[in-house]
Amino acid sequence: MTLPEQVDVVLVYPQRAPTQGRHWIMPSLGLMYLSASLRREGYSVKHIDHTFLERREVLEEIDRLRPSVIGIYCMITMQDEALSLASQVRGKALTVVGGPYPSGEPETFVDHFDLVAVGEGEETIVSIMEHLDDRRFDEIPGVVFKRDGQVVKSTARQRTKDMSHLPLPYRGDIPNDEYIAYWRKHWKDATTPLMSTRGCPFRCDFCHKSVFGDLFSARPVETVVEEMREIAELGYDHIWMSDDLFTLNYKRTFELAKAIEEAHLPLTWECLSRVTHVDQALFEQMHRAGCKRIFFGIESGDERVLKEMKKGITPDQARAAVGACVAAGIKAAGFFMVGYIGETTDSLIRSINFSSSLPLDYVSYTIAYPLPGTGFYDRVRERRMHGEWHKVRHNRLLFNTDFSEHKLRAAILKGAIQHRLNRMHMRPAAKAFQLATDPVLRVMR
Image 1 (cartoon, rainbow, N blue to C red):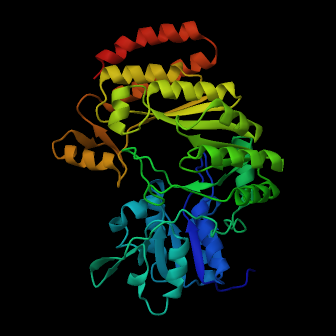
Image 2: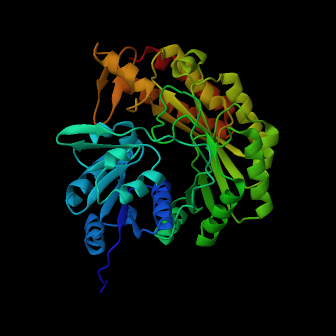
Image 3: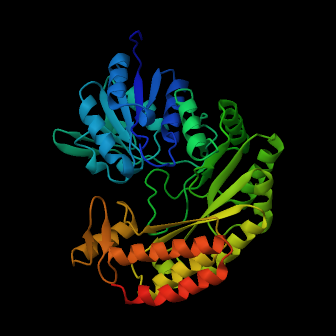
């Protein structure tokens, strides 16, 4: 029988492991950082990862721990789980929600939680604990809440470039063995996330940066290597560098890759990159440090659509970066978006054919989706008033002017088939398929 105990804070990650198929499921780095920050200040914390637990087990554990504060993480894909959990625990403790979705749309959550934490949460959660008795939460930067029926917003929390003050994320409460078993069963390499930098200075119109924003900051190289060593000791094989833009600072990226190489860690890793600020020399050093794959946010093969997206890149730069990556011995992967504002049938075909012509190990196509808090969302909101965008199914918006969803999904299928044929070194077949399907896509509505 488990004896009851009491902790100051319970942090809950409401992710659920899907019962069907295989998925990239990882623990919450954000909650690990909150846990570490609270522990450093002397508070007792339990981080409950819902991924492999039933809701009943989570609620029983919360009842057993009797916390003063319950913090729940939320991103847009976890909205339903976060809100349902909030309804079940409200009144048992002070409830706080944080993460990308609440940071971008706090008004959506103020009726469901006592406090909404906006932006980076390490200092915010400690300040909440310090004001638990006096309830002067309006004095804490970065919180939104309701008082007497009115929404109260405190001053915004300002980020700093200095990340040396951050503790290493606390991984002791994570069900590491279960994550390792899941990844080895479905993906071979047991993978967990690490974040070496925060923020991104670029202003892509579709990008949601509600937590870390535009200010780019980097951790000291030695702390990243120390965390990687800890991850290796836990039994993981591979790291997902979850930085918004791992390669932004060329000199620092080179130094970090050299330090990782010199540490001789039994780990491989992968990361996100732009197609600018990189070259083959950097990729070669990253390869020596164990980098297996780089994901490039290319998004379109049409220069005009890229300008609509405010990407600040060209198709030629994308081709050059992917080529340099592959030449350095690292697999390249690409993200592409179809149906963006300004997309035409010509640009759609051009983009699909461009994506499948690149030597990419993996290609991801998505239908453009406007996230709340982005410039793209604001532009769509105006156009919806004129009926140019409409809602289809749960959480989907679609541009009406040129395309049906059927046409966009046909384009994605076309790209996936062409990419597969090229990867199988069947280039004549890929070219024949392209020539046969271009006219079909052109006449589809």
